[in-house]
Length: 346
Image 1 (spheres, one colour):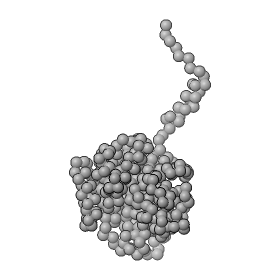
Image 2 (cartoon, helix red, strand yellow):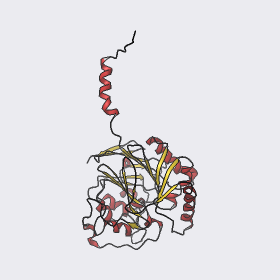
Image 3 (cartoon, helix red, strand yellow):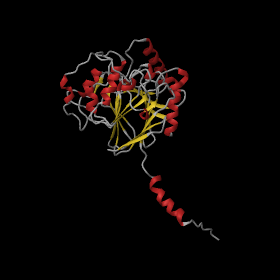
Image 4 (cartoon, helix red, strand yellow):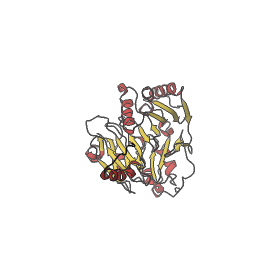
């Protein structure tokens, strides 16, 4: 005799109620990983494809590689599809050998050969070259796209060059440029940073590495070549050396981007400069600024409220900031230290 399962009516109803939730589209995930004033940002699209931008420092007993692995586990991935190295300073590229020994990396993208002669940068580049010699490596140019199924990754800057024409919807005159700001040339690797715009539906996130002011002005003045963004990773960790070529985060580009939310990937004693912090904090339309660390040089007047800081004064626990974005440009930011979360609706 054929057996027939009898399912209580309340269970049937529960299954029907849960079905739309189970099939709901996944968000775009972004992890801003604490590498103590360097950069490492993990992006995972709804298809499960992953992009890592930079790997933090070398040494420290593999600290930064361990923190990247923690974020990868939280994101539910066991490999990295693509890795962008914005430039070859040791706080961005130094961790490549340690990370590559822990997780499979599909392909590497960078701006081409190193041109900086400092001992530290040459050492970081040598370690990077050793790893990529056995892997797929692509030197990108402004205007290139790195293919992903669930998000769009556009290259805006690379090797000291930038896009020459406005992106669709951009190109407006930038009124902040009326002051005629200029900046000295920066011969370092910073000015050669690979900068990308990541788009997911209507959501737009920008990461310009450590791009310095002269190159920022080329993107923002006299016309805004990029348009506005929802989420801005502060350039160069919120570094400002007023009057020098090594400064970043100019008012001209920050206000042109008009971010709704900004994340500062500073360390306790690196980045988070009061001048750079104030420019972002005062940007028209900014709803919130989040920080990876309390900035000691910022003091009580140039740090955000504690719930927006992943690692508070005197702590080094490797807490990260996570963003989950929907295609309608609604997104939620979560502080892994205290699980404080805030949702930003378009």
